[in-house]
Amino acid sequence: MLHEIPILEDLDTRKLPYAETNGRRQVYLETYGCQMNVSDSEIVAAVLRESGYGLTRDAAQADVVLLNTCAIRENAEQKVRHRLDHLRAQKRKRTGALTIGVLGCMAERLRHRLLEQEQLIDLVAGPDAYRDLPRLLQETQETGQAAINVQLSREETYADIAPVRVDSNGVSAFVSIMRGCDNMCAFCVVPFTRGRERSRPFTTILDECQKLVEEGYKEVTLLGQNVNSYRDGKVNFAALLWRLSAAAPTLRIRYSTSHPKDCTDELLHVHQACDNVCDYIHLPVQHGNSAVLQRMRRGYTIDTYLHLIARARTICPGVSISTDIITGFCGETEAEHRDTLALLEQVRYDHAYMFMYSERPDTYAAKKYRDDVPHWVKKRRLTEVIQLQSSIALQNNQAEIGKVHTVLVEGNSRRSADQLRGRTDTNKMVVFDRQQYAKGQYAKVQITGCTSATLLGKAVEPA
Ligand code: SAH
Ligand code: SF4
Ligand code: F3S
Image 1: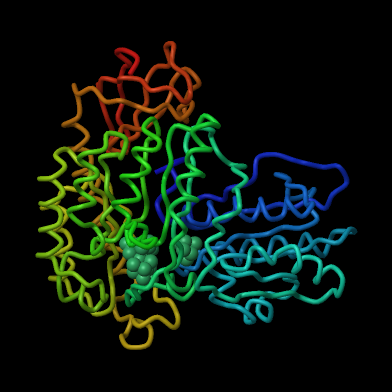
Image 2: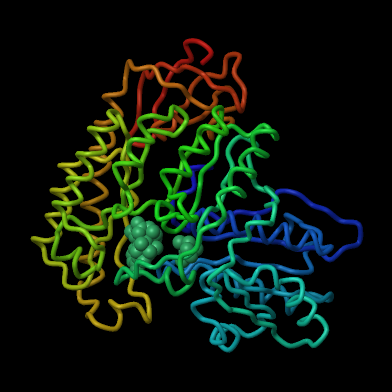
């Protein structure tokens, strides 16, 4: 994915890459979790900068440290708790005051409990409360007491706030188009942390993308927890893509994360008809067995899902498809687990994000089912899923050898400044020798080799 951030995972700590001083209070912002959180941090940066705060990339220089957190799995929360332990130790040692704040999904999930459990936290703000941050910061500074706002909203989309794209590579940008989720899958905390679904007016999205084009951006990823259920009056997601594609024909358009139930034929036809709408769709299946899908409350069966995959491949030949998988959900039998392996064999995804089930308090599954698959079994099943999927991804990538792809260059490869990296229309990462190419350019690259995660190639001509 963009900046190689997994779709909704908490692997990297991302930091704002620059400092602004001038005697203002300095904020250090750290982002965990999904792309939505990265995008929200850009809103937070805009709100704070507007009200006179500086942004720093050095936590030691900061007067305020804000963690934008994720609650999707237990280990995502653990990571933040460890970080808070560390920050509190620093706070005790410091002579100057240090304000520590928790934003995002953990703030929403734990609310007041966070202040009780994690003493020395000064501020807690949920995902819909970011406009209130300046007031909350002032309140905690003046009173010495913790300040909290975890109110969820039915309207807030931050549509009028121009994000400060502090962590951007200047080539690809995130644009949030909807927030929240109404689906209530049995395992998932997101509807509780992000609240009800709401969409941003489509004109503000077109305007923001137009501005990005003027600033030299080449690619946008439209974001939402359930991005393809977007709707503004008569404009549904397919219509939005169609309009955006026409309004910004030079902009590559991606989106994340989509739900199978909202992937309509109309949307597939937009992929097919619009050159700049990428031939890549993330269709998280979660499991390969219909009884488990029903327990998960996903709203589709394996038959309807496979039918969707077939339609996608018919309407949009060559489309690349990725997925999310959970192993060890409540009551999962060995036979049900094997159905997931069989589904992977059948669909042959280009990529998958794979997780062990982690029970989240207050969800339907936590209330109604027993988390009865032992940890070691969940883990063993996850390993089997990962091994099978990487062999399939490797075979899919091997089939690319010899083909020529148009690659948008995102920057230097991780290993060497002599090599560049970028992605194909189908969202595959390609590494190739720099030659005359630079960040932000398109290159036609012939694929010469691969691993299960990356294609290797040679630029053959400018795109
Ligand atoms: N809205 C997207 C997914 C958002 S969460 C969709 O419905 O497809 C991203 C992924 O995290 C999910 O697809 C799921 O695979 C995983 N996930 C969510 N809750 C989880 C849990 N409790 N334990 C393990 N994985 C979980
Ligand atoms: Fe969670 Fe389901 Fe909503 Fe995705 S669709 S965010 S898995 S509740
Ligand atoms: Fe995590 Fe919240 Fe995103 S729970 S995955 S940061 S929506």
